[in-house]
Image (cartoon, rainbow, N blue to C red; front, top):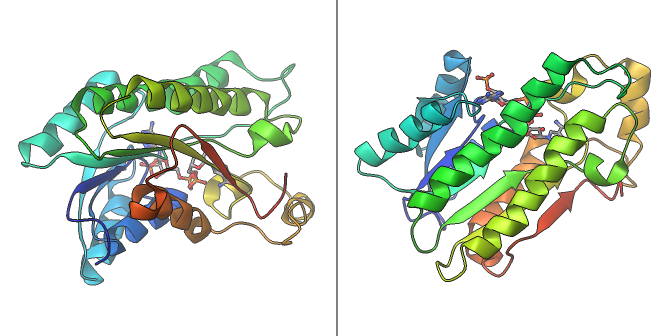
Length: 246
Ligand code: NAP
């Protein structure tokens, strides 16, 4: 147990991929972790069991982040346990790729609903409820700088998250709450591998001078830093974590 002091860290999309690694890491740091999921309770419960088996504390919480009422209910449920969200990690996200000319409207709307409005929904609850010393960590993507073709709609939702990050940091002036974003580069998860050929994956793997994909644990380390005492002076920033790809 290091720096969590037993506050609740809520990790949206904590059931799989990067979110699951963040949940495990923050639990190891000493936080009680609320593992949020939307559709996959079994995966969330596996993460909770892994944390408990390692001596940490966690519980699963269902909510579709795109649903403002569901998000309000999730925060209310956590409060009803007598806990306060001391760390909010907005990790839940979806990525669908298509050139702007070919992107269909329903897919665009879904990415906006989950990545942008979903982040907005939890930020709004946190802005209303979070106490002194809170930490908020959003998730962008290095594609906001790499600007790769076919990533337009997805990157636009994440660029908006970067803007929300800096503005909320300023709105919370005087409350000793930091708001930052982490912008991973290509990271080995289901979201990254879906629909990509082996050749494309090999190319993307070489993007960074470190010549590998990021791992969920690479990103969890950055989140742990921002959530812990060593990250206290970082505020309103987007930290790009991509092995030097940009
Ligand atoms: P992933 O493996 O597909 O996992 C996505 C997680 O988000 C799952 O736990 C999923 O929960 C949850 N989720 C999806 N829609 C949700 C909703 N409406 N409400 C609540 N939870 C929801 O994705 P990942 O690669 O770990 O990505 C995590 C974050 O990092 C995303 O924001 C993504 O944009 C960002 N990112 C990823 C990469 C990369 O290369 N992997 C790079 C840059 C940024 P269920 O299991 O319940 O569906």
